[in-house]
Image 1 (cartoon, helix red, strand yellow):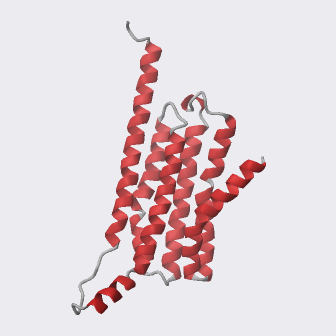
Image 2: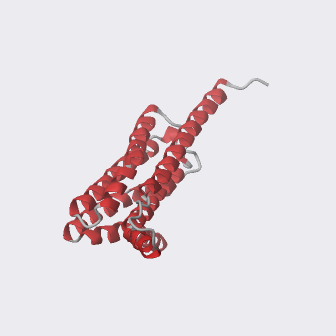
Image 3: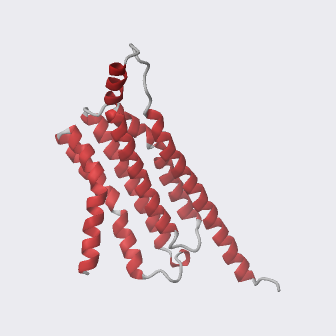
Length: 212
């Protein structure tokens, strides 16, 4: 039996969506992997246990930056994964906004390196928080490009689910802005805000969902 033209078109649109999804997953994975490059052990001046222990302790800012950045990118990937799971097709507008988001994600190891190298300076903290906010803006733009066109959204996706996805996409903007302001007050406050912002926002959203 030959496929109907409409069936061929739907299949082609789905294939394009799958290619875009696989490419996006690869960029997220590479960015998360590159974060560990900044956690490197410098040469020891003296080959003693005390020197090695001190060097490992000196790398604590690098560990923190790696964990925070890994969680940040992982949260963006999880939201991206859920968003694309709500779709049945893609278009050029979604493709280009998604590429802009991936560009920002691919650059994320650099702000992470700045944060780990200069954890006590406000400029490094603010730079990191500002970049997170930019990713949040692009993430929201991708959500709007995907969900504002009914032709791209799967039929089983409800209006309530679309609204919930929009609300979730606002989280990085709020967390980034909070981290930026906190870093201006005290550098470590920015790290704390960025580290706990995501779970706190998630808990608030779950409570609001239950209340509704």
